[in-house]
Image (cartoon, rainbow, N blue to C red):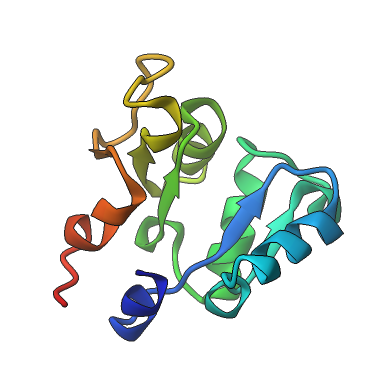
Length: 127
């Protein structure tokens, strides 16, 4: 799926609130994701935590995009989606990790998927 998104012109990044940057790098490399993600950031290396807008805006700036051209995909309404909203970005909530349960009523732009595999279809990418 990541390869398919890249092939269709999407850029992918990882923004984690993990306190250990090396752990984030090791996990993304170990699972084979690192080659698709640029940048890969943790709050430990940036000094900002989600839902602050600064780490989200930093990624848009590195990609030479306006914040409104970026869509955040996340599983946390309190951190990922609130951060997207704080940065004036679009967002997609995946409820896979919560078995379809949305923890609160805060959903920005109302795009919800139940499994990350639905992302390709949601973004209109054709096989």
